Length: 239
Image (cartoon, rainbow, N blue to C red; front, side, top):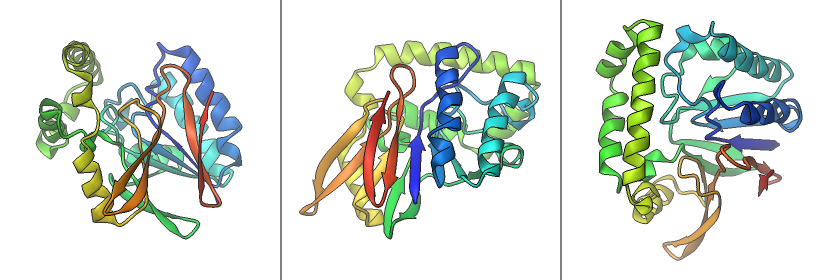
């Protein structure tokens, strides 16, 4: 089976080039694949499934719905921007939500899939915020607000996030190598695929005397791209 993996598209009305690239990808590469895995941050932000009526969101949902209808299996994983995607979106698109982390069998070998943010354990401020935002109490309070209130709140969070990121050393926002090794050991795999860090490529490391591969997906702010695994062989494609 030919499986494709993407993440960190951060699609929004304000980024027409990335949107057009996504539309072309869905109609060409994804349509010829057996499965598509979106490993988080498909959207710049997602305020709840009741925002599916927004014209831009409806267009994107339509692309997924048409892809799923042709037989390509579509799997979604939460990222740090779209963790409020839920079953309403899945029903509208034909996609299914997978946990983070997730093990998938590809050509007889288990591959570990993650968004990647939980590997960045040196970023203590972010990990604290993640625990808060993933709690049922925070999400219930946030989703209880009107669509307009949520949009305004997210814009404020995005501006604050930009300021915080600019003030942090870059290495803090990358993965912690020991955390990565623990993930390989815990799940007993040779290959890990994730996004989030915006450092695309094949990162090799040795765990307990065996070489492992950590494939980092490209973001779509610049060139963009995807990972293809076919016949057990990974290939990173950049545009």
